[in-house]
Length: 347
Image: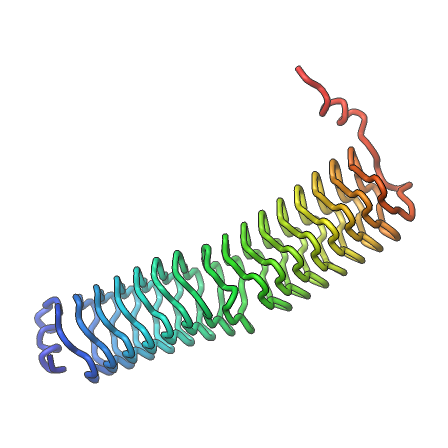
């Protein structure tokens, strides 16, 4: 099919089905609202084309150039976009379902409220892209590039980001539930209010990161580095923090209930009003930490080091502290008799 034949069919409002548009120069054309079925755009030029609200079903756009395209609300279903270029495109509310976009370039795109579901996105570049409220679900993502990307309220559910490049990326209110970032360098990043529920962050470098009100419920942070990070009001309920290095961590009013902090280094940490109820902290170091008003009720702190720690009104109700080292715990609270009686009461 030639360019003129395509335009004639579009003018008549026809569905473009089974056609070969490969290598054609369709730059700047207005193809908005057109339905394409099993059509080949291999190597075609769609630079600056208008394809908003168009639908591509089972089409092959491998190697196509869609850079600068206006593609708001466009839908790609079961399409191939391998090595395609969409740099600088307007993809607001666009969706890719069951597509293979491996090694495609989405640099500087606006994918606000966009989505990619049940496809492949290996080695895709989202460098400096706006991924506000973007969703990436059940999609393979090996060696993803997110350098400088803005991930605000972005959902990356169960995404494997362990090989992703995240230099200069920002996340705010993002949801990385069940995602893998094992061994990633996230040091100094702004991850305010990000949800890392059940995520794999083992060995991650989060030094000096901003983690204010971030949630790590059930996350694996084994041997991670959190030195100097700001995790004020962070949630670490049931998290695995064994062997974590968190010297100077700012975690005022953070919740560590039922977390595993065995041999964790919290030297000099600000843990004002932090909650460690039923946490496992044997061999942990709280040297010179501020535990003012902290609650360690029912916590396991055997052989933990509290040397020089500030323990004013810190609660150790029913804490297991055999072998723990204290400079002084005179200002701390022990068992609460009334609470203990209530806990032991049986009908």
